[in-house]
Image (tube, rainbow, N blue to C red; front, side, top):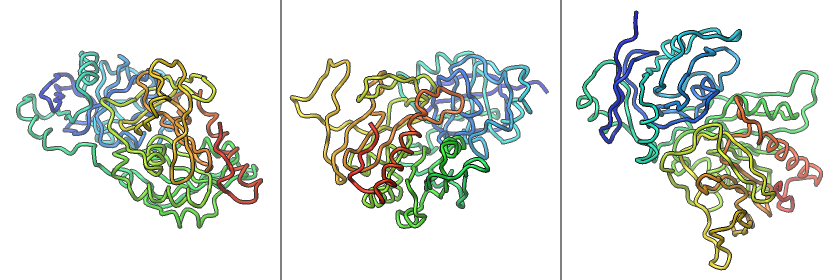
Length: 399
């Protein structure tokens, strides 16, 4: 059966007519865009995209089909999918199904529109907003009121929705001795993350999102990891409290994306919603300690508010800002990384407690892999704590 018409409507009334693919029906969510040219299967299965409609800026999607090796989780999490032109054939020896068939099998509607560039420019100017895809109506006036009645992302606690319902363990390869025990809080963890740690000799115990500090520490971990995930960090207070309990115990901590935002909130910093977020595999980030710039993979719509610097320390025209320490309940900390596109905080490091976090994704399965050294730094942090006999504040986070 040939594909039928479909409709995309944004909450400000902008509408795009197109052709449906994937599942028939309707999908509601926050309309965002992703600038990656590769990794569409990883994007679809990343739990951080829960309750979002994702538009791909690359013009041709689906040409390598869908395989059983690359999913980042147990299912597709995006609410709906927007592309310019779906591939008519899948040409990869690894392919098992077409993208169209996979979306249909999992009940995810898609729409192909000629105006993905216009849509992206609109979202950059107006910001991410609620939207809907429908193959059931061609009337924007009929769909718009239901878009306006749909829930937004601000204030949404989605971590518990996507988290594992029960603990599980990812171990190093058979015959390899586990060097470190990591308790990983699953706020929407991607499968490549515990695998990246396991390759470095970590035995990773993945635990539900609402696991408290006492339960985390009861596993006798060498370190605690807080994962990426969807939703508003301000709505995940239970994970912030767990983070504070682990920090107070002096156990090494590493956070990625939502985990990094929760670290900021645990330190007393506010978080805020970005206009259109960072989503893609081409974000330049500067390490403020070394001055080195790495190209990184992102997927987040919230960020940590940059601490206000004293007037004599502000450097509005500096090519490389200095690391200005700020006080927290767990000792001094610094902003360690900045996004060079817009100056958003991309990393926080504590100086008196063994903890750090980054806003981007060092485990990025489709690439780039510039930042995977951060897993080595987490291992070094745990090794330092073990060498000292027990974790404590005297072990500074990696520089």
